Length: 291
Ligand SMILES: NC(=O)c1ccc[n+]([C@@H]2O[C@H](COP(=O)([O-])OP(=O)(O)OC[C@H]3O[C@@H](n4cnc5c(N)ncnc54)[C@H](OP(=O)(O)O)[C@@H]3O)[C@@H](O)[C@H]2O)c1
Image (tube, rainbow, N blue to C red; front, top):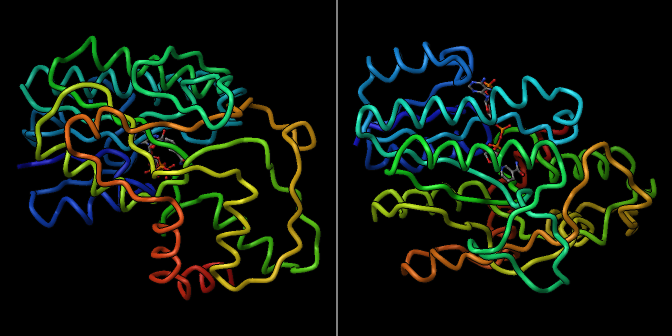
């Protein structure tokens, strides 16, 4: 199949390109080649390329900045997916869109999880835009799959793990506070790319949760990662109240891949298993990237 990947230079987009090009004809594009918020440009690009599938990995992902940069966030996160889904619908192409755990308010008690049928209630502007995008995609086409993921990390792009590594290597004795009362499922972008490939091959429609199995806090994630990396640190747990951010985050962002399991498609593993494999593969590159 011919697949257009928007956000092709991003963390997930690059892993999707690596995975999908093994069995498909893939065209990854960054924002310079195609601004997804530009409806005319999207229509012209899709008309020229004639893709069978549009996979949207593009988004305004700086969650805190979304609180103050509302207009650009809306354009990229809502109008972008709407334009792509509309162009996909007009061509009869499949649309695959990536969404987030931040569509929930996180008020369920841990370790309860959220399934695809739970009510949404975003508590940040980022979460609101991502939820509006889900609605826009469903309105524009019937041939869509939306995968909600969470706490993404990978070898390409910015992410929490790289920030933690930089801080620990910068000064192993500096006490760094890391939030220990928000729970989620850290998800390796490469594994998610493989999960997207299975959804694509199965040609299934609708909404799917797609995160690693199991859950932890940001503090547990940071310290587990640094232990695996054998990087000493003086990280200490703190509460959300100790570490205020412009955008609110759900305290419980644990997603259950219920629909993937029901369809026999879930390939996600325990978050620790993937984290260990990630470190084994990329330890030297990760340390080299900081220096
Ligand atoms: N990161 C997470 O923890 C997380 C968690 C849950 C869900 N998600 C979702 O997962 C998806 C992938 O996230 P990611 O971590 O791979 O993000 P990322 O590394 O920030 O990549 C996003 C990409 O979007 C592109 N983009 C931004 N504005 C654009 C525009 N107007 N037109 C076209 N492209 C544009 C950027 O391209 P250029 O660099 O070319 O400008 C960037 O490479 C997103 O939908 C995100 O909401 C992420």
